[in-house]
Image 1 (cartoon, helix red, strand yellow):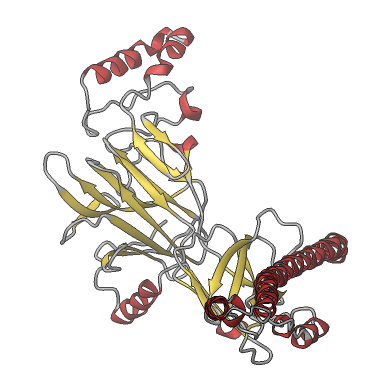
Image 2 (image 1 turned 180 degrees about the horizontal axis):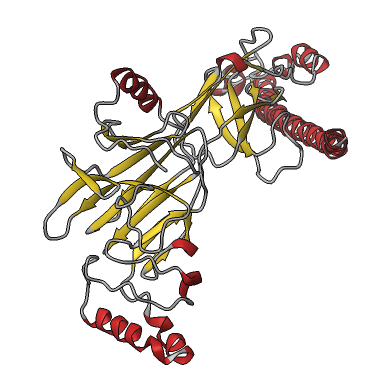
Length: 482
């Protein structure tokens, strides 16, 4: 009913618009005809004026010549009455000279212009026939999206379509898409608007680099000729599920500045709470002294920072000791395959990336318990790159990639880390997870940026199949998680 109501409203709006557009086109055509009429009439008038002037001038010359000829004839007639021979000879000579110079003998008797205006006639038969054959433009038919040829892979959606009948007049196609959380046919009223890709010259198109932050995407396409766009195809809905999460600020260390997709270490993060702690209890003086000493000492080592702080801060959590500048993800995982990427911000001295059970202990550090798994990068003092679990560490070869991909396969009990650019495997943990897990991070003196809404890359899937067939030779820290 919403679709029908939307269509009815569209007809009521589009019909007057079509009439207005048609009137505008006819007005333009009338204007062209009027301009052409005025131009051609002007040409006829100019031709008539030119001929009139030429004929009038020739007529005036002829009148003058005739008058001169009449006067000469009268003089000749009078000369016939002269009896004196000398006088007659003199008169005859004058007549001869006047006849030689008479204008009537120098004028052409052919008119310089005719009264014929047929060369300015116009044949409107062809134009009249064109106007009589004027019809509404042929609109391309709606394309048909071939769902079987559409592909969703590596955060790229490829859409293919065809025309129901061949149409050589099609100039290009318009593809529209929008994200949605509703399965099935697209709804008229949706939270997101259609986005447009115009001027597509082929019958397929790929949208790459997408963030899959919705469960589905709607697609529709229309064909266009040089003058008009056709009807939309029947819309299709493709599944675009991916793992989306952000940092859980309620789980973070006091000295971490947390936003939805970034976390940064802030050595001054605890100063704003000093007065509150002091006003509530005098017993917290040792904690305040520690905070002041930390702010005076500049950038403290994560291994030397005291963990004592008031139970009132951040819901009473007090697990932040040593390397436990941690923050957890806000979404847990209990099954399936998930993938996300992490990038260290410039000059980050120490950070860890991995997973943990939600009930991470208040003194627990990533990789030092049997419920946390991570890789740790340390660029402070002595550089190190290691995989950590259950207080055991394995040094990793190679350089630390700029961006780390994390692949968590809860169904097969694997946690793998990849170079996000080359998809080269860094390390794999194998474990039987008895509880839901959450992404876990540690950062000190620097920051991390997070990329989610990503499908498991096809290269990672292929590598995991091969690796599982070989028995997982990279998994030296395998465990049975309790």
